[in-house]
Structure formats: C-alpha cells, structure tokens
Image (tube, rainbow, N blue to C red; front, top):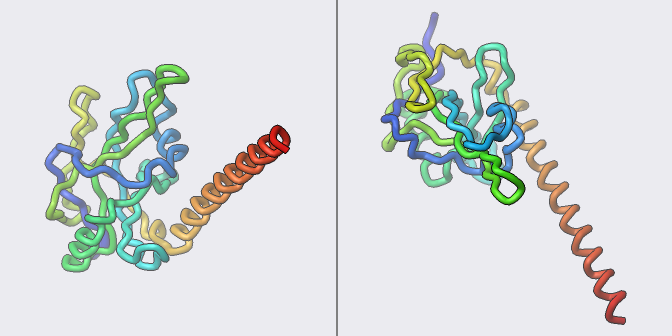
Length: 202
C-alpha cells in the first residue's frame, strides 16, 4: 500500500475547536446538512485539514474541507483558527504528513421563522497539542445517534488529486467573487441612499 501522506487527528469527543470563516461558506454547509430545520443540525462528518502555504493573506493558513465520501464532491467550509493553524502545520511537518483528516460535526442552522434563524458552524473533535496518527490506522465506528453525536473516523478515502493547488485556487476565486458581489451591492445601496437624501434636501 505504501506510506500514507495523510494523518488522522485524534479527538476527545468534546468538539471544542470552532472552524473559522464558516459564514462565507453557508451555502456549502447547508447543502451538506440538507437544508435548515427547526431544531438545527448536529451532523457528524469528516473534514480534511489542508495547509495553504501559498495563501497570500496567511502562509500558515489551513483550509477545512468537508469530505462527503469516496465519490461525492468535496467543499471548502472554512479555515482553522489563525492562532492554532501554525500548530497543526508544525505537527504535520514534524511527522512527515501533507494533510490530515479529522472528525467533526455540523451545528446550528436552525430555522424557526423569519426572526429566528441561525447560521451553520462546524466544530472539530481535536485537542491541543494535536495528536496525529496514520490515517489508515485510525479506528472505525458506525455513526451514532443524534443523542450521542461523537464520531470516530468513517472509512472514507482522500484521493491524492484532492490537494492540487488549482483546486484550492478555484475555491479562493469563488470566495473573492462572492465578496465582490457584496461590496458592489453595498455601494449601490449607499449611492441610492445618497440620491434620496439629496432629493429631499436640496
């Protein structure tokens, strides 16, 4: 089988680490969760933690991708918090791995009417300092009930081509495009407000 390039991050079942930047990836997370529901989501999942040394904003950035399974598409859903991303990057370098898989769960995303809606978030089952083992030797457990959402690695594969730089570049391009649309809409609203104000007060 050869030597694995992927590590598995061991967890303690507390899901204490919050993925950063999830507000920019609500569509991707909601698609995985199957939409919003009154009680919100408590969905176990697997994520990939992929260093981005070419990230123009932070060379220590570690992107987080939801892994849907062997044949399903994968989607970026955020980043490791900036204060702990360098710790994982160092752990990967020290152990000779390129990236890692981690158990996680999707939370939030409730919909109880127009005035009571929550955004989705993702929590990682990991603790500091990071404890890495080979991905192939991670324990496997069947998914548990929603009353006990703890999860140990499912038998999911991470294809080598998943980590190609052009794929991460496309993800960043999509994010920049969304941000540009928001900025343009804000400018239009401000301009419209200024025109209304000037018309009322010549």
